[in-house]
Amino acid sequence: MREGSLDAPTRHPIAWRDPDFYDEGKLDAELRRQFDICHGCRRCFNLCDSFPRLFDLIDAAGDAELGGVPSSKLKSVVDACTLCDMCFLTKCPYVPPHEFNLDIPHLMVRYRAVELKKGRIGGIDRKLTETDANAKRACGALSGMANWATRRGNPVTRPLLKAVAGLHPDAELPRFAARTFVEQCRTGTAPEVDREAPAFGRKVVLYATCFANYNNPDIGHAARAVLARNGVETEVVYPECCGMPQLEHGDLERVAGKADAVARALEPWLDKGYDVVALVPSCALMMKFEWPLIAPDNAAVAKLAKATFDITEYVVDINAKEGMADGMQPLGGDVTVHVSCHSRAQNMGQKATQMLRLIPGTKAKPIERCSGHGGSWGIKTEWYPVALKVGKPVARQAMKNGNAFLVSECPLARDHIVQGIEAEGGDVSGIEACQHPIQLLARAYGL
Image (cartoon, rainbow, N blue to C red; front, side, top):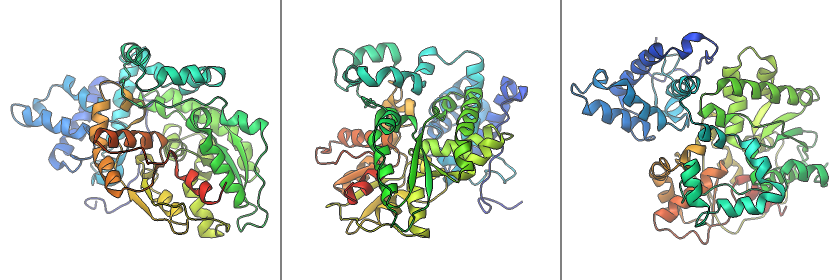
């Protein structure tokens, strides 16, 4: 056995169907085994709030060892985890195939799965993660009312949302579209595919994702327009959410069900030679990496994982293999690109940065650090201040860059970074409103 990260990290399937997975005694023993190794290493102290909490608990114990920390206090370490995966991917020298076999993010998922099974995760928290059900109510005719009610600074509704749902009154919440991306594509005219483009002949199914479908269809339209300009035929499909919000609560049975449903819905497209492109990195991560570990025996899931790309990854692949279509013009300013954690966890490189550097006369400067948002975690009253603290280095670097454009591969992270700049006293009035890098590429093409 070789020491440290000398071999590529690998992951084991999540044994959520094994009764021992939910045994609290065995869970506590595994928590202590892995946390004790973390205590002896401490390389992850500056990644998030989980590891400082763990080390503070140990340092405050009578013997300054993990044995002196009551099991009940370990919950605070788990609660602070956003499942960003950065400890596993970038810091830990003891991940598999190392014999120590550390996988802290999946250990946190197991802890939450036990909490869920024991009825310790509240109904409101679970309701917040029902993205499809919530968004279907808020989109359409009620979108104006929903956006008014969730608007930051609303003195009528935001205190109510804090009291009922535990949402921090200052946290930016996603806006809802009047019509979903899928509906707009169904009734609208598809962009004309450029038959003269070098990549003509490629075919893609755009997995709309809940965010692009319900909250910002402009991301989907930008992706579709860029792909068409580059000769790529597109179809838009959205069977349901990828289940990342349910993974955060350890609801692995729900995630496995979603993986099966989406994989079976997309399989006919794969059989016709289509690639699958996800518009948000969290969803691409689920489809490519998490689903096969949660449903390792599902052939449709495995087939889909091999055919799935993140949108920025796919555009860079076009450039590498066929070359991009002509016609891009400078943006008139440089770009700060936040490389989101769930992009980094796909282990595909800085694809958004590479993509934006294809734009003539445009400099793209990446920030490769966690924004601190963490999905539904970062908007809660308890965690929003922590989320700002974790994301402070990103906000400060973005302020220092002073670029005209600020985007993130994760649209929610982008909005959180803007709030972090505000919290640092920065001026955000001149920052362009684009949430995703693909929107800037569409602008460069004049689309």
